[in-house]
Image (cartoon, rainbow, N blue to C red; front, side, top):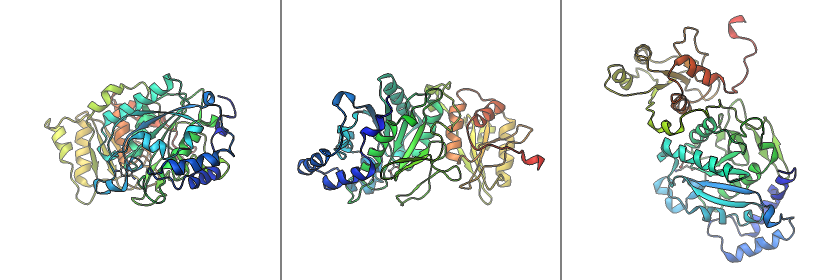
Length: 389
Ligand SMILES: NC(=O)CC[C@H](N)C(=O)O
């Protein structure tokens, strides 16, 4: 791709002007308002039709694909993908958008097999010569699907998950501008890496996060995505994209996993709390429940209720892998201990630790090797081991 690829797309200011000219960005914007946007486009330098980069849009459900009518169903009713693209009539002048559907569901209803469908659609997009992939997604579990894809994919093109906190027909919908910025992102050279995976990202509210680090932090606010201490990868201003961290993948590369086997893995989450118990672990130890592994949410740097501690020990003795994360929003769980009886999932929340274990278990069920798959990621750098301080 040439150096100028990114410049085909309007900057934030001209996008806002265009959106204003289009009479807002609701799905309902009709022909008359689109015509005003056409007038605005006369002042912008447009690429020739055959120079527009191909971008594959993989659609799932969520608020970005819903109208206010669907509020009672938790914004899980999907609008057709072309309606979402039409809500940004300016887009087609800059990129050639092709639509692929993965799963028409709100994100809490998505299954691991749906994550596999997204991964396959992204691989197909690369094979078809796309410059990048945009996945429209509900924000509730966007971080799990994005992390899964970051683990299993090894693509030359970037994949960016976009969501919205306001439905498509809200007075100030955020989906359309997120979609436009996602198109800008995936066509930028900085996000096309040649010697390592180009990475999976999540974009909301003009900010770009690494799939490994992103977490939804607020159930209502537009500014809900947070990467905690590692911080976002980039953000858009009127004229620029400001890049704070090297683009690329921050996850371990587990693209040698058995993708088709991931939906078959059973990995329950066990969360600690005062007097909390772990009946599923006990059943797994007694052969009454078939689990491939467990993801345990500790308190602080590490520590569970006595019943969970006992159940973890018995589960590990039974040869069933257990990984440990912290319920704290930021900062890692304590490093794995030297006896190899624990796999620390660094700062991954337990729901992402579970996704990691699901993918890793298709490669190995050896605890030490699972630990290596975690440590192969790019979470921070411990320059002085704590034990030497
Ligand atoms: N803002 C959203 O997208 C959240 C609700 C939505 N149902 C989801 O799939 O996550």
